[in-house]
Structure formats: structure tokens, C-alpha cells
Amino acid sequence: MTTLSSLATADKPFIDSGNTAWVLAAAALVLFMTPGLAFFYGGMVRTKSVLNMMMMSFISMGTVGTVWVLWGYSEAFGPDLGDKGLLGNPFKEFGLHGVLSAIYGYTPASGGNPAAGGIPGSAFVAFQVVFAIIAVALISGAIADRAKFTTWTVFTVLWATLVYFPAAHWVFAFSGYAAKTGGWIANGGGFLHGHGAYDFAGGTAIHINAGAAGLALALVLGKRIGFGKDPMRPHNLTLVMLGAGILWFGWFGFNAGSALGAGTQAAGVWVNTLAATCTAMLGWLIVEKVRDGHPTSLGAASGVVAGLVAITPACATVTPVGALIVGLAAGSICAFAVGLKFKLGFDDSLDVVGVHLVGGLVGTLLIGLLASVNSPTGLAGIKMQEGLFYGGGFLQLGVQAAAAISVMIFSFVVTYIIGFALEKTMGFRLHEDDEDAGIDSAEHAETGYDLGNLFSGRMGVGSHAVPHDARHHDEEEVKA
Image 1 (spheres, rainbow, N blue to C red):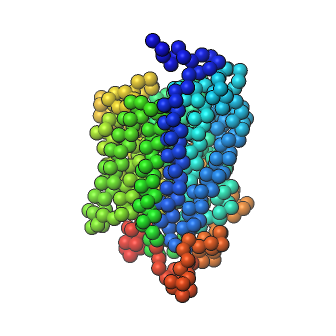
Image 2: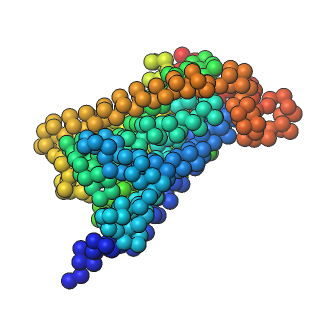
Image 3: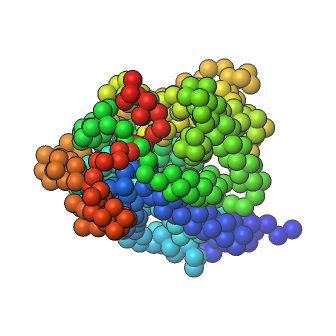
């Protein structure tokens, strides 16, 4: 019988066209998520900030895509510098040197990556770059309305290089695509898998990472003018709902694509991703109804994103019922968590901390409670136990917590240093007058909407005549 192993040779690995097509399609889905994020974030800010908010996502595609080709891929998935699985060598495959050779045939001397799972190394390059892009773009929501665009652009390169690429190496550096040394979070690869912590599609590397970074930058830049005093409601909930829908659509590529093949595991992950997102939306709306008396469209959109975030690390290791629990927990907990910024006094404009950091923590930790052999992976071939609720004890929960805390502390500390250095050298915080007038006109000399004729110039884009905010409950907090 012909098998993949019999078709592959040392000089010409077998390429599975079906798996390759799915991974490339999944990469396109995840790339589409960044414009979706731009809509989602853009609708949540005030009218005078919508273009800048969307540009912060779009510029991340340009900068991160460029450095990924040059040194990012090699830093995230190249052979280890040293033997600890902490960082890939950014120079070994600089400019993707040798990486694409798997299309034509792989030999160890070529320096290229083999076609693991029947997909070429180039497909893996394509799939992973879109993760890097959106991880950087997510941070922008924490500093909406008040960051200089040029400094943000420089920040995207520095953060990707010093924070995301190392974290990706810890989490996603699998055998076949990176150094073969064991580490602490990716089996046969980087620093965070070898001891049994598990993150299927990026709960630690992307969401906890971006959430902690968002908190650090929010502290560096300080609060928006009027934070805690003036209501700052979303200016366009239609854009928010559209963005959430695009994110949900693209997230099936995010999670199911991480199976790196079109098969049983990808299908199971797809189902779990749907299940968790549904209950997360319901959980958020229930909290709103009980707490505020009315479920909102913004709450529905936010619940969707919270569920997607939480199921990302857990989608391959829980059952469909477990996915429902993950989603319900994330939607409910994140609905409360977004109010912490008022109690703790930090201005996370669009709740990157409350949704991505908290949601990522929920999903990562619940693996320690809900991991099951009846999940899409069956826990086969990975160094982890069943969760506490399935008789596995507390070990897996402890390992998951250690992984989450490690990434969170690393990201916060390094991001704070980057942000502080940029503030002291280039200046990161927008001038107060420009912030008051409107960041779109100050930074881009454009406006999102031509309202001059409608309001006869009396209430321009930079006016405070109609206050807005990113969360409905913000207004009630201000009144309180």
C-alpha cells in the first residue's frame, strides 16, 4: 500500500495538496482578521479617532510582514541560539534563505525546512506570519486616541522582534519546523512545550502576550484626556458588529488551521471553536442583562471575541461540552473584567486587558481542568495529562499556570521597557492639544467622515459636543 512515508524521500518530501490548500486558505482567513480587527476597534473609538485606529492595524501588516521575511521567521522558527529553546537564530534563515526549498525538494544540506505533515515549509511561513501580524495589532486597542503614529510604527517592529518572535519560538516551534531541542512550551521545539504546558493556537503567545503588552503601554502613555469623567462611547456600533463577524469567520482559520492539515483534528477544532464562541456571547449578554438591565450589541460582539480568545489555546484538548464551558466562563468573566480599569485606575481604551489577557488566561488555565482524551487531539503524542475534572490531578493546571505567568511577566516587562524608551526618545504620547482636536487630523491630516456640511462646521470631527466611549458601562461608571 502506498503511504506518505513511502512517497517521501530525503531529497523530495511528499507534498499533500489537500493539506497544503487548507493551510494556505487558513492563512488567508487569519490575514483577513486584521482588517476585521480594524473595523472592530475603529467602531469602538470616537469619530475623531477612527482612521488612526484602523491605520494602527493596517501598518502592522506592512511592518511585521516585512521583518518576518527578513529575520522574524528565522528568529521564531530557526535553529536555537544555545540549547534552551529560548530563541531561534535570526540570521540562520535571514530573508527566508533556504526555507522555500521544500517546494522543490528538501535535503539536510539545503538549510530548508522539510514538508512536515505533507505541507511545504513555505505554507508554514505563510500561516505563521499572519499570527505575528494580528498579535501586534491587538495591542493598539489599549492605547487608542493618544499614541503618535510614527512611534507606534517603530514600536511594532521592536515589539515583534523582542517579544513576539521569542514567545512564538517558545510556543509554536515544533520539530520539523525549528530546532529539535526540547523546551518548556512546544513538544520537540521551544521553551514552553517540553514540560507539558499546552497552547494549541496561541492563547499564551498571542492573547496573553498582547494583553500584558497592552497593559504596559497603557501605563506608559497614561490616561486619555477626560478618562473617568467624560463618557467615551463607540461612535459606530455597525462597524463593531461587522468587525466581530469578520473575526469570528477568520478565527476558524486561526484555530482549525493550526492543525496544519485537513483532517479529523481540524474538524474537531472547528466545532469546539464554534461551540465556545456561542456560549461566550450568551454569557456576556446574561451578565449585561442581570447587571445593567439590557443586553447590548457591543456586549454581543465583545462576548464573541472573548470566547474566541479563550478557546484558542484549548480548542484541541477539550470536548465539545468542555468548549461550551470554556466559552461560558470566558464570556461571563470578561464581562466583569472590562470594568477593572476604573477600579484600578489604568486606561485600557478598548479593553485589550479585560478581553485578551483575561480571556487568554481563562482558556489556558481551563485546559488544566477540562483536557480530555476525547478531545480532537486525544492527548496523543503530547506531554500532558487529563484535566482535574477527568481525574488527572492538579499537575496540568499548575503547568498551564506557570506557562501563562511566564509569558505575561516577560511580555509586560519587556514591553514597558520598549514603551518607556520610545517615550523618552521619540515621544510616544500625542500632544494634549492634538489629542483634544482629534488624532485623525493631527496625525493623518484626514477625517473618517465628512461632517462639515451636515453640521455646517459647528461640530467638526475634533469636537467634544457628543462624547463617546468604548464600552456602554463606561457611561454608567462616570455617572457613579
